[in-house]
Image 1 (cartoon, rainbow, N blue to C red):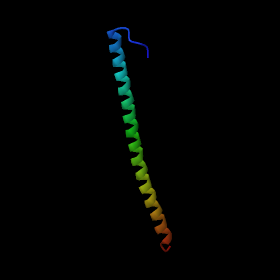
Image 2 (image 1 turned 90 degrees about the horizontal axis):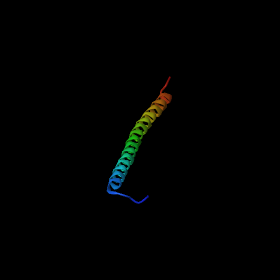
Image 3 (image 1 turned 90 degrees about the vertical axis):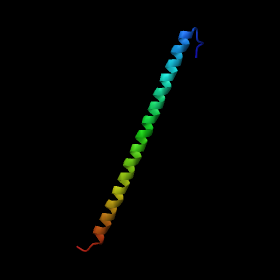
Image 4 (image 1 turned 180 degrees about the vertical axis):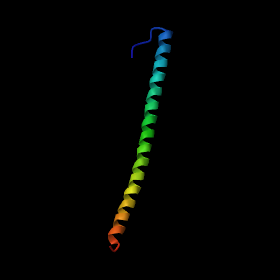
Length: 64
């Protein structure tokens, strides 16, 4: 936030900002990937739960 004193400082500041933005973007992309992965896991678990409930109901309805 302080004023730039010389061209070299301006260049360093620009590079620092660029690296910081890239780090933020990488972090955001990683979070998006993890969310997508967790959504896929949740979907698989839901399907598994539904199949187990169905099997449980079928077993209860079947004569012993």
